Image (cartoon, rainbow, N blue to C red):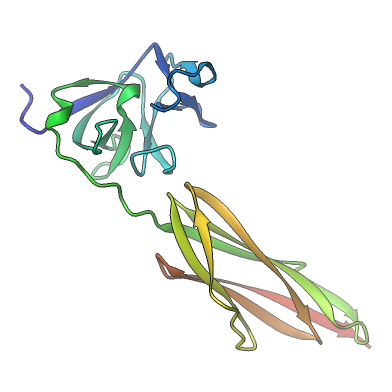
Amino acid sequence: MQSAGCGTATSRRGDFHGRGTAGGAFDADAHDRRSSDASHHAGDLPVNCRFGPGLVYEVMGGLRAQQTTVAEGRNGDGSWLHVHDPGNPGASCWVAVIAVNTTGDIQSLPVVGAPGASVERIGLRAEPQRITVGCGSFPQYFHITGEISANGPLIVTWQWELSDGERTPVETLVFQEAGTLQVARTESVGGPNDYRIYLHVFDPDEVVAQTAFYANCLP
């Protein structure tokens, strides 16, 4: 017997309209479900379970074919279910209704708001990382690349902070969907020294990455 406000979701075998992913799993896309290029034979492939209710959110895990989990909520229009993540006890994720078989009354489930996306990781590298040149060969140049990864759509504010104390103006980076975006700058050095640069993210999460680069010279 199903208790009120609860339901189950089972990954669907056979045909459904969806979008393939690099991992071999599928998401249902209600907006594309009638277009031929979005139709796949799912067979025994799993169904993606995402951080939020939409294809713009990061894949957190999945349901194997015929695997069952408990649905504890839905989005406003009932097109996505908030379910227990079977691969991560105590955690939840979202599956598209069109990709799963359900029991119980979906519309009786409470509406759960989409989670706020966040910065998951940042990285920073300098190329080259170390040089040795003639002492009369300065200035020299280093290419700095930062990577910022987010688990959903959001706006990130950030700036560069240099080892001499200089800070660049705060900039914004817009994520339309989960993924990784790059920022870059070229750093000029006027003499031999050990240098350091920081990529400082302020919002929505404060995170700092740093990398060192080195210039040596020979007379």
